[in-house]
Image (cartoon, rainbow, N blue to C red; front, side, top):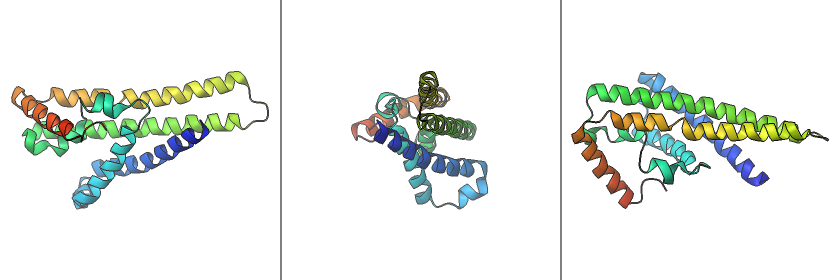
Length: 180
């Protein structure tokens, strides 16, 4: 369990770095426009990789049926998103990133307290159990905080756009590109 926890902490730290970077991109439009598409895609891929390996199997269970706002931005042209829809999806994406950063910060703090309390010579059972519960709550938050952003993105689509969405999603599913 210690190795798994260490791997998860490392994944979380990597994610935090990239999530902060992604947050900077969305909060500073001129900076975002100066980044090459290749670099942006690499950063998004790193963030996505974390969520596909998330302990709640977010990728294979939820994401493959309900991709998030970033997916809509990547397919904006194909979906024929209007300028108004595009603005709303960008806000949803930025909000999800902000909430994820908060969640990652809380998870990191929960792991740190758990580790600190575990290192004591005579740890208190109630304290350790509480620490474990806090880690679980922080992980759970990261699993459910994204769901509204994913579902709200879909509700923005018109009937015609929903048909395009389903075609795109099925093409990606059949190609094995969603929810691995």
